[in-house]
Length: 193
Image (cartoon, rainbow, N blue to C red; front, side):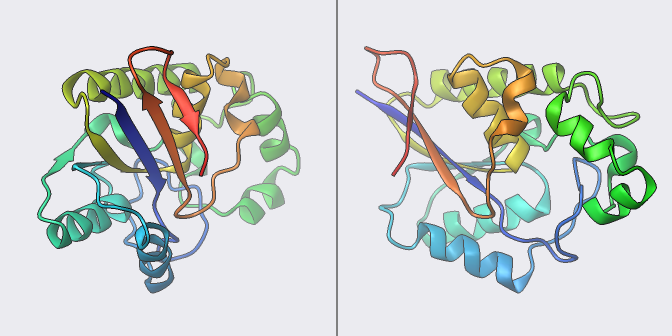
């Protein structure tokens, strides 16, 4: 049998694009709700829903699960990476203070992480461990995981066995979906549809 984990990034939160990380818990905006519902509208319902505890993920997970009579599992390790002193600020605000900060971070997130930020390697390990748990505990199911761009980047990197430094070479739009398939024959594989 096959296990499929479909990871969907939350839609646009209230307040627009900011570095929210895992300490700022803004709700989905009306646009965000539309993005999420649009992304899943034509997909056959999943068997179970697993979500980050952050409300920009959990509210949609609970709404979707309720519509399809599914259970929701809240998984704390699916929180976004902590961005330290960048949390709550837009890219423009950060660039106004330090024009090289974001550029340096995206080129080398290990060396140039924001002050007090969660280390990228620690974050990728956290996400890898939760994916392993899901694959073990939810065998032969189709699972919807509602999470964050960083979680999806880390999941892709872990599946591809890419180093943590490669995470920010992946762009993940709002309500984007990527699926990881484990058929028990090949190693877990990324499926793009």
